Image (cartoon, rainbow, N blue to C red):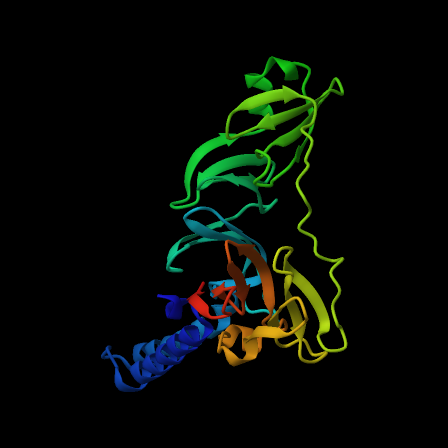
Length: 326
């Protein structure tokens, strides 16, 4: 099924259509009158070029960048900006935000859904397999396993549900999204009071919840940038003192390499994207060479998107557990 949505499949379909219509124009003369047959052949030749003309507006499955990747107990959940047309050509139109969910154990795609949301879709937090998304100016809790809607709410509905907002709501912002603290939204009412709203529990408390969660920013970890070009720490194990670094082999940045180091800086394993055959024709033709775009570490496994593929990697060995083209 993935092949049907690839650039290669689109090109093959265009060639078959073109040859078929030309053959039809040459071999078939369905009318008795000559001028009608001439018109028929002209129409066939013109129709042969239609897929080539409209291809940029109809090519499916083209993404500019993957925005985020998250995990729930059962799924790996990704969001991307979705475009019709091919990057680098004349017609590239924003079509909306597409979300994907993969089975966490096998990598099998559970679904992908495209929404034409002018404000986009952004991940806020999760509770089990339920995910809180911001969609345009509203919010939705979905079940990540099947994309079914659990609950919709908005600024207007919150004003109706809670007497604290009788004077209206000024602003809603995401609060803590960590596992250590329940997911909440910071709400400022028009009377200047601050509230914390917990959407999974449908509970409201006055004041903003403090977030004592340790930061996952590893920018303070040292990287040998002479050895690892533009190296960036993606993960650090404070107990084993092991570090995972993303770097490039050249300034062209047409590859992404993961290297896992022990406490002494010895390389335990490497994952070189250029040796994995993880690019399709779209990315070869694109202005944006494939690269590791989104990354998450969880329970000794790494999940990341690269060149249109999602990869699950065993952190202890560097071996690929599964790979899925989306």
